[in-house]
Image (cartoon, rainbow, N blue to C red):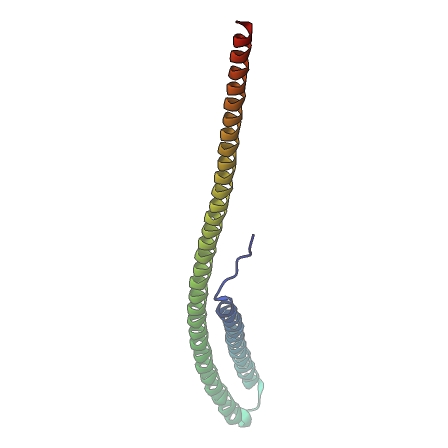
Length: 171
């Protein structure tokens, strides 16, 4: 029996590879979001530390601390913007992954349908071969039966002629 060969195997493999690459990009985007969140937490902790140390410093350094805390809040705003951008990128990458997975799934369904059609064709071919074998056996059996009937008729005719010859000799 022949093996099933999918005609679009190269395209299937290409789309499968594309899904894997997109999954990698999604993981990278998730890592970027996690890193941005961690950077925000770190900056918030840094600002809290500065505010606590500000309470213990000399009054002449309060202006420098205030400037530094203001700079920390600006950096925190930038980190929030970076987080939003990372989350938007993650959403885009996930949407792209879903699109690629849908394409791959459609191709998988096509491959399965093609395989089922191939199996049906193989089944029909096998049935055709079995029908041909059966018809050949039937033909041989019919020929053998006709030959046997012909031989039986010849033997019967021979027996009848022998019997008639014996009956004629006896009379």
